[in-house]
Image (cartoon, rainbow, N blue to C red; front, top):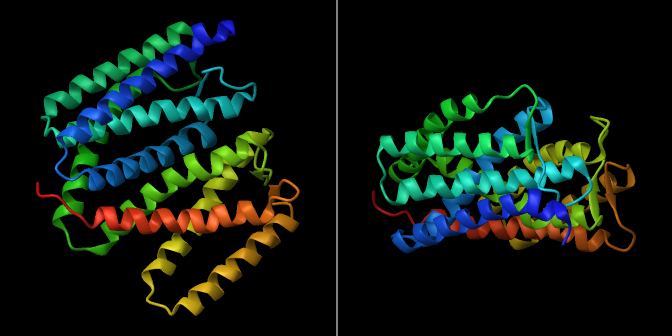
Length: 283
């Protein structure tokens, strides 16, 4: 066991364990577990989008779980622990109907965790300050609860659509794109920055936005199977063009597997989460 495990990694694992415990208690209490799971992933997708702006665009801070040698990819992995924790806590507050006072308590808890991580040297601020977390968490929790209630109460499809988009992109990033990046099977390579992994993350954010929206609308349209097959074939060839142009690197012999994972994998989660989100609980 490397020394970095006990100095860095173990703290992120402990954070992950608290997230698992939170979700266990949340799902035990939940009256509709499928809806809760889908909405929690939507919350995760939301905070991922916020983090992509703070970490990629504004270089606000870095995480150091010391899981891999690639510094920016290590930050991405540390960020997953952090955002999963926030999402699971948010789900807990909603399902248990916790009051505004608890939002303040959790904000202070996350403030203290952040300060601890900074003191331990496993998380570093650049221009960001822990006080921003303390100030920002209460409105974040309030907004997520408001979003949850509007999703249940409103019949307007755009709320459902945004929730479906956020939940799908969260799963796409964690289950499809990240493993292929770590295994060097598929990497997005547009040169926005000097860092290889930062370029991958930035390019994926653009790619994921367009692909997910296209597939959500393809799922919504009541087309004959043959027409859906034609559109999937077109998307397959677009992926091939991206591959041949160097925008996407795919390991030799893996193009079909990687492309089908992107297209069919994302479409599968759209179908699943759409069904989960339609099973609305009562408030």
